[in-house]
Amino acid sequence: MSFDKAVLKKSEEAILGILGNILDLSPEMANTVCNIYYKYFKLLPEESVEDIKDQLKFLDDLLLEDADNPFVIVRQNIDTLEDVKKKGSYESIITAEFICLNKLIPCLRIFRDHKIFQNDRTYFFLQRDLILDIFKYKINRALDKTPIRRKFERKISKIKINEIPNLVDFMEVRIDDEEEDDEEFIEEFFDNDDY
Image (cartoon, rainbow, N blue to C red; front, side, top):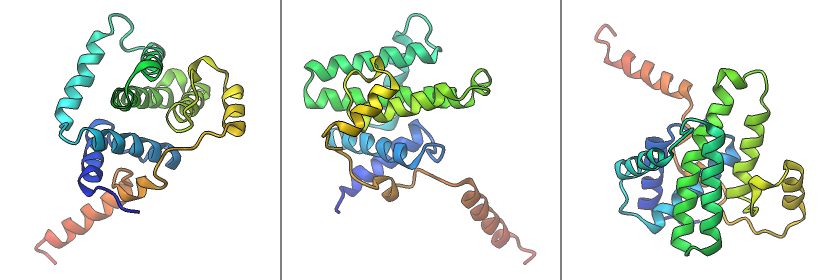
């Protein structure tokens, strides 16, 4: 399979610059993230990571209340995405998916890491499945459906998954800290004049 190498590199740079290392995401979710970024930068290759960060911060500033409440962020962004899907152009849908994904992944990490949620991983697993249902399986109004209903829809629907399989394997966005530590050790070892 051939890829646009410039778009691939830009997507990789943007993922690391905006979401950071995505080793903490499952391989399936990481691949979905890579596909969303790849589609976005295929459509808008001139976008810079810094401009995108500024735009995402501006969107955060538009939230008048509960801007740090992950439940509110999830609801507002998914509702906006659903509205765009109903009446938007292809370009606006790709852009809305990109923005929404960049809001939901940090919320997923909050549900995973925050001390309030440590004793009950339910919110993390629900959010993880919801993100895949929206972006990979394209289930309409996924937030308004129960997890069982969405699972049923995934099984019976004939939805063609519109992702590049294993795209994540072509990007260096899942960086293992042990590999980084090994590289640092090797560099320090060879830079040391004592040896």
